[in-house]
Length: 194
Image (cartoon, rainbow, N blue to C red):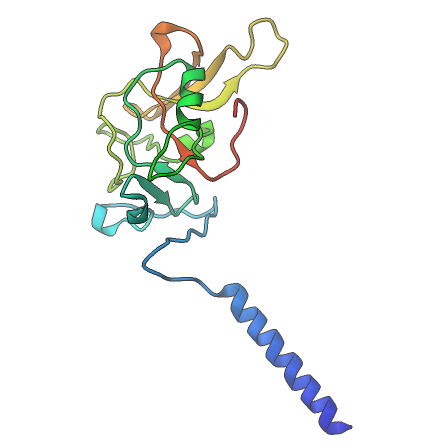
C-alpha cells in the first residue's frame, strides 16, 4: 500500500512538473513565425538587422509582415490609391496578399501601433521597419467610425492616420477631397464597419 501511495505521489509530481513546463514553453522555428502578442510589451527597433519586432514572412512571398508586438500581420506594401472609406473596406476584404484572402481595415488603435509620434522623418514608422510606404501619403483609413448612430449625420466620418506627421483625425467617408489609402491587416478582432 505504501508503495502505491509513493508511486501515485511521484506520478502526480511528474504530471504537475511536465504541465508547468509545457505552459511556459516557447516554440522556436525557421517558420512559420509564431507571435506571443501582448499589448503590454514594447519591442525596440533600431535598424532592420536589430529589429525583433517585425518579421517579413517569406512563406507569404515577402508580401506580409508579422508584428511580434501585437500579433497582427500587415501587408508589407500598402495601397497607394486614394479611396472613399467604403472602397477601402472592400479593397481589403477582396485583396489577396501572399496568396490569401482574409484581410481587413485595421482599427484606429491597431493602425496607431505603427505610428511614431516623435519621428522627425516621414514616414513616421518605427526605425528599422520593413514596410514599403511612401514618405508622403495622404494617410490611411481605419475601420473606426466617428460619432453615434441616429445622430443626424453621425457615422459619416471615420478616422485616418497620417504617417507623415504621426497623428490621426476624422475624415468624411464620401468626400472626394478626403480620400485616403488602405493598409490591410490580418488577425486581431476588428471593429465598427467590418
